Length: 168
Image 1 (tube, helix red, strand yellow):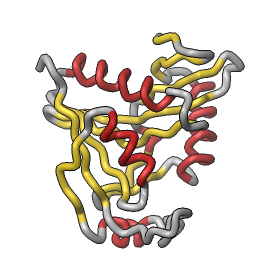
Image 2 (tube, rainbow, N blue to C red):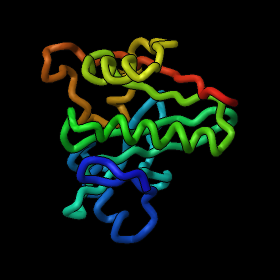
Image 3 (spheres, rainbow, N blue to C red):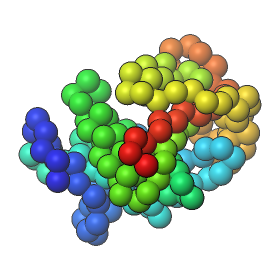
């Protein structure tokens, strides 16, 4: 476990964690299914890191999977932004990537998600690709994905970001 200000980062293993994690994913993603790069991914099938507060409640969660030499961050969410939860989760998954022998981590976000783009780029991830129309296609699998973000930007494309893992 990695201590932090009022919460800890740890792997999610127990049944109680799974229930709380499912509830967290319901609040943040509208359920356990996320759609990315033309694939519906069930977060319940993936390993997860959780940030747990002193009150025992989840402050954030990150789900990932390893494929070949890369670790894909499938989902990352913090209950409250600006408290360092996302940074701690990302740091912890980089350690997981090193342990698994991965040479890089990667993830996708959407074109409207300016806060995420700011967050990831400040932590060293670089935009390496744009899949135009990916979110339009994703809506066929998950119609609940909005067409316009709260900031007024139409949600259409996926941006792929990567971070090389040093020491690999």
